[in-house]
Length: 240
RNA sequence: UUUUCGCCAGC
Image (cartoon, rainbow, N blue to C red; front, side, top):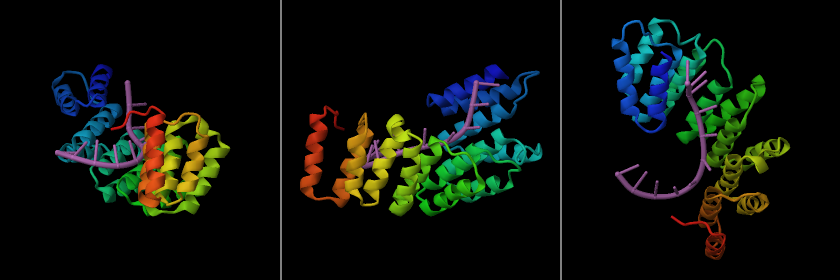
């Protein structure tokens, strides 16, 4: 089982989702080897990558038959994610609601799913839900919450999350948090704040430059945008 | 062996 799981996970990791799904099928032919929760989770992830909704539904049905949906977090979380990736948010929500126990990954997956499909408001509802339920938040949570604020244009909530990640020292140490923060302010039209955060960053990666530049292009003047563009080149960022 | 996260653009 471990060998099969490793291959399924590895193939979908490196973009060979089809091969991963073939491994899952081949595994069923083997004598004495039975898929476990991790097998189903890895295979569901491969389904998400490939957009193999049919296969995902098939595995979901099997999970229902085995009664694993409500009680197995690894399977439940993988189901939430595959439905999010396929854009079927209502079923993702339904699986989330049915889970007997939810961990931070269950919440993060749902918040991410809503945010990734531009449902900023729903994402923030569950982000706030984590706060009120006392679910521990990690950097993934904050990134998804900030992204949701950028979608809805809710700079006030975004500032609150900013204060929280600042308190935890994440802005200077986590470059994904940092660029998401710049992007959030840029999308909310607060380009001065975006610039201010950007200027304090220890490392300015191409994503944070692009977020700032896009912010000026959308909400700033032509002069500001071109100045940012020139500075980006002077900083030695390779343009694409 | 395991499920969740960032900018822009194309497909």
